[in-house]
Length: 178
Image (cartoon, rainbow, N blue to C red; front, side, top):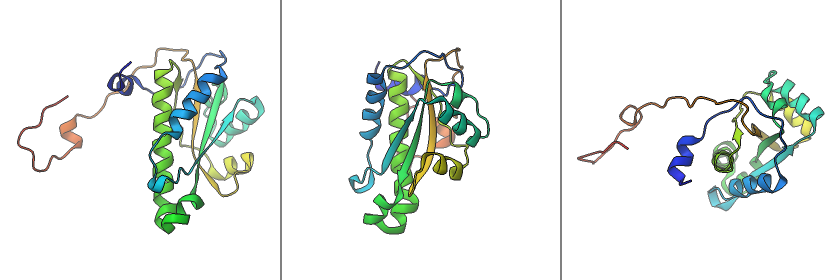
């Protein structure tokens, strides 16, 4: 699958089969995630790969009972190491770069999920304190919970706003639509 097709095929899935995901596929996802760009090559991300049902139950509770976190065979909690970015960039690294960099890693992971024939959902609605306590994250900040599995339903791709509505081209005479 070419990149453009993968990007457009990616969608958020909240219904998963219970089929196990081979560990090799999971490590491939993580390998894609870690290839993301980061400010000063700080690579401030850390991944907690959760298969344990009891931990997933607590994650589900911390995420306001979003059951798909529990139902997916694996959920990955993606964290930002704020101190790692702050060591080079100070407060801007802590408050912005670490989160941006981690978000780039998450998107790489999600695109690889699609390319591998899996499904996922970027979940940002959760109680950070509860997740931090549950996983003993210390100074790491949880940025997202990503439930991953094989889709149990044909999730509809949501629409996207047109380019002319979201972009301003400066200095261009002629702009073609994709």
